[in-house]
Amino acid sequence: MANPLIHLLKPEPAHQLALWALRHGLGPRQQLDDPALRTRLLGRNLVNPIGLAAGAEKKAEALPGWRAMGFGMVEAGTVTLKARKGNPAPRLWRVPGQGVVNWMGLPGDGIGSFVTNLRAFHQHKARDELLLGASLASPDGDLGEFGELAERCAPWVDYLTLNASCPNVFHACENDPARTAKRQLEAVVRRAQEKPVLLKLGPSTDSAAIRLMVDAAMEAGAAGIVATNTLPWDKRELIGDNGFEWPRHEQQPVGGYSGAALLDITCFMASECRDQLGPDVPIIGVGGVQSGADAVRLLDAGANAIQLYTGLIYRGASLLKEIADAIVQHRG
Ligand SMILES: Cc1cc2nc3c(=O)[nH]c(=O)nc-3n(C[C@H](O)[C@H](O)[C@H](O)COP(=O)(O)O)c2cc1C
Image (cartoon, rainbow, N blue to C red; front, side):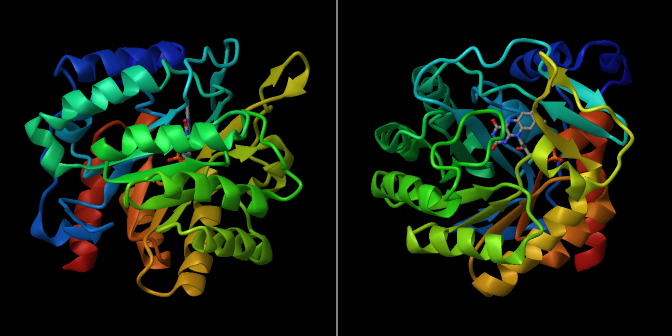
């Protein structure tokens, strides 16, 4: 993930190798804890507002390694109740312009081993230094499954995120996504044992549509918003012509785009959500952050903290240091 040699591998084996290194204490180490980076979020004091986005640490298996790399926050998952193979390979493609398209389809070992890993991390000294979230999904939109996921994860994490925007699984009631998200959030909030619950939105530049989703989230008792998830093929006009052929499976375009071209959308959404929610509701900005200037721009647009994934694939851990330095300079 950090090493240019890793790019000689296909992206999914490269990620597995990086996770193996992190699990074995062989990942990069850096302290990004300048006092100017401290951030209050979701009732906790973060050493810095730089987060690992959902999907990079699906199984919660290398949490001390991510903390050692410098992250102040990690969103583990997305976890599903049962183990899933996900979609057939290939399902992760690097695309030009520092992007990737992923069609993973929520693979994972299921909630049992995820919670075992969360419990083990609870004993670790790094636990106190990390704001830890769990991202939850039920591929069939089953409310009972959402409730069970929330109940089993809540004791071990600081917050829960409802991933109702993954483009790689079927979503029930897509014709009324706000109503669907509201019901699913209610199911999670009810069994979250007072832990804050966030809603992760998909990319949009439609103010009215964003407003509907945010209203639904607040009515359901959500504590905040994460924006944004990857961009599906049918919304590709939002990132313009990025000069790449969209990956296909059996002739059909598949997957969701993440990377540099998302940043404008992410900043727009952070600013819309901030206008709507006022100063006190937490907003985590994610999508297209690949430099220190990008992170500062997203924080200025209204995000309390940022997350990243694709930038890490292209830039490695040096990106975190660059972001930390830029925030220190900006706040100083
Ligand atoms: C390979 C891959 C897998 C992902 N899996 C998840 C996931 O399981 N849950 C989720 O909410 N987002 C997932 N995402 C989306 C990221 O969390 C993030 O929203 C998106 O990649 C935009 O940020 P970025 O441009 O910094 O990568 C995934 C992204 C990638 C690239």
